[in-house]
Image (tube, rainbow, N blue to C red):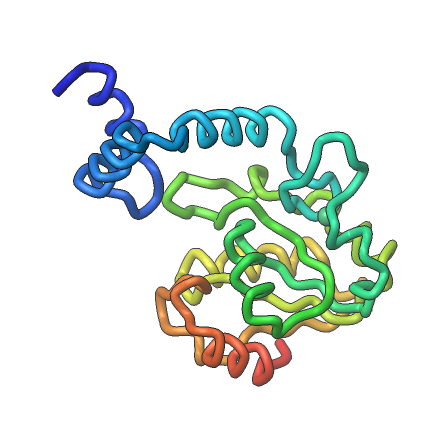
Length: 199
Ligand SMILES: [Zn+2]
């Protein structure tokens, strides 16, 4: 294989859920495309990578020029509910299913997860203050139903503490054991959200 193509395939193969065969097909499709798709993709990627950063409040990726993201700016979402998720793809999953209309907080990982994440790596130092500032009445945990998810949930609950006044809940057991949110269809996710139980 041409070294330039090989380099590209290796980069794509490192992406989540892409093996080297899928990566090869993508690279081939891009290089053989006559409509300039490879160039537009490269430009869009470079533009996003250099101008997008995490919202300082919730962690959702947003334009570096704005003080906060579209969720934190949206006053209709200031309904006292805060949903704790692992990463941005969980926000997208929940938004697609339209089961939740409060605010989000992205932890950025799970304790002892695949990346060796430690409690200090999580986006939680500002969380207790945030719960006060935004008058949060309910903190909803929408973390994966795994040992790492539960460990993280208990840790975050201990950081928030009981004197915050907020109650805690987690998604109903419709979330399969070991399952990520984005494996759920909208109906199952909606049931899990609607049937969430208080902790
Ligand atoms: Zn935000």
